[in-house]
Image (cartoon, rainbow over all chains, first blue to last red; front, side, top):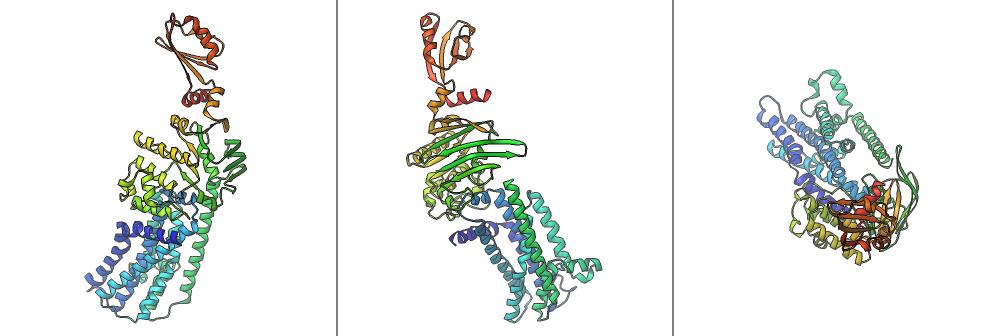
Length: 248
Length: 290
């Protein structure tokens, strides 16, 4: 337990607190987008409902960036910089290592959702019942599991440039097709259909339904769970494959 | 401490280790010597469970290498450094200390690695030598009984190397068991109580330096003369003659018969005769040429 706490504390400092890339891309950029679309470009768009929906979209966008870019880079760097080898040669287990990473990620995901909600709430006077805030936060936090698994899968790549490339190739299309930047209704039908079956769309859409006190489609929960299962299988396979390669 | 029985390690078609046997007892300081690619790091990685042998059996502290328990009793300073971004020296030590049941204190490790002045510096800002010293501190975090040092002094300046080997001397006196590889053979010669010479996938020698010197053409006779090198080349027991100007170096199996032959010439044709045992470096060079 002590190992996990120390590791969590140091990971927090190095991966988030002292990492300007995380602060800029995963936190400040979604906040800037939110303020840009809801305050600066206010005349062309909409109303209180849009402000709420877009708040959820930007919180989801922050989770996408945090899990695909920051987590994958952190895990990759730990392997590259010798920490994973050091753990192999110490009494601590990989379970503790990953446990600390997930604990940290859970805290950071909750924190980023909270910060974006607070900024949105204050800047656009969004007033909701506590239950709506909590339910939406809880859902986004829980639904970040498949995103986290995407980040872990990317970290198995063996080159930093590949990590950046694949993270970008996944995160931005997922965000666009998931309707985080603009409504999916303005996209071609094929793109809409594809987007709805990718992991980000249902996360965002259910979040928006929860914040509006509307029922979400069960199918969207199903898609999220399916992706979580599929991505977990991919992570297990990649981990097994990597260890097999190491011992070959 | 370590038991290796008939271990073979093969990477595709290349046999790196071929039916190797080894037993290391507590308190031994084993110097593992061999050319690049001879299999030194492979052997260490096998003992540490980072590689699986193609055949054979390895036990470390009575357990399989992959068991986690015994890692509380061992430390390893491998060739690569642990260089975490945005982490200070003190934080990296704190992190690694948390992995062990009974770690040394961070302050103690900073003193041990002579890194007190760099304690709050970011690891990414350390020099190559400082990083090696940090790696040593990380290897010592669990206060190990068995220590692996794989090329420990690469990148260290002369002063740091001296301090480092002083620390190893103290560990030797404290009864720790150490397996060390280094390209600086004079360092191994100085510290090791046992030398393992690895070549062609097997130990060509396993014993102390004195035995190695006896067994492998271990004596040199130096003198000055105007006589040609060929005069000495055919004397029984002479392995090699090197002549540079008037200086002659004879590599011999035993010095006494050669000195008897030289005796009538001394002071007349042969001057300044000196006899000395070959260093590990010289024996190693000789063996690698064979």
